[in-house]
Length: 354
Image (cartoon, rainbow, N blue to C red; front, side, top):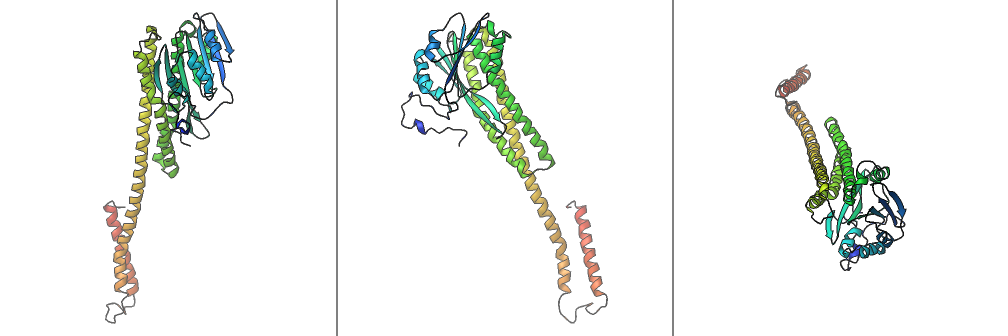
């Protein structure tokens, strides 16, 4: 199964905007949870339909609807009708292979991002598509399944920690984006620790398992690139946005997000170059090892050339060969061969060929 592209067979022959779910169903049923709050109020509830949420919006409160599950497109069609979203926008939300992007759709700002998790069993990164629909006094988020990507933000709202209960819906939108980018950085750091550990092992004793790990790291880095790199484009677009949905007070926070996103991208590039350097070093080690083996074999071959010559001369069957009938000739020949071998070894050592 390809990790970088989803199976798009369902889209073949479909007209744009038909809202076809692309991906793997990760929940049995779609769940919709609302959180309504202001400085003095906090309430959670489960709603059965998007229209229920839309009809109960209160301009005095912050209204957050979180939809878990994207496979039931009729629910998202209702979302499209209730909040006057373009069908192509909803088409992007249900396509889990969609590149992270920002869309200005009527009175809404729509952002598609990727929340990342790390699977300890397979040692691979996985991504969950997160959709944000920001309106005048509401925020709607869509997720592939019920995860814990926003657990910290929910806790801050419920416990009234920090400034989140005193700010507007745009600050909630920022807080959720910040949570995703923080998660990106933590996972990049986790991968970076493994890459740096691999580098230390490479200098001690390179072996095939290290090479396999390096190629796997390179694949994971490319997967991170696909999910993380476009986020900075989204943040820069948000900083320049003049729709009125983002208050001027939010600009410093968005600039801080831009710094975090830049740090994430720079770290990915740094570790990508580090893995490439490690692969080059590993290949250099293999080449040097092969050269050392060939040098050793060549030296021993060079030593045996004169010894073979001496043995060949005294192995001939001519009657007039000197020292042929000498009583100690055999031992003198062995001594001469030993002296030649030792002399050549000393010569090679002085030349630092050994």
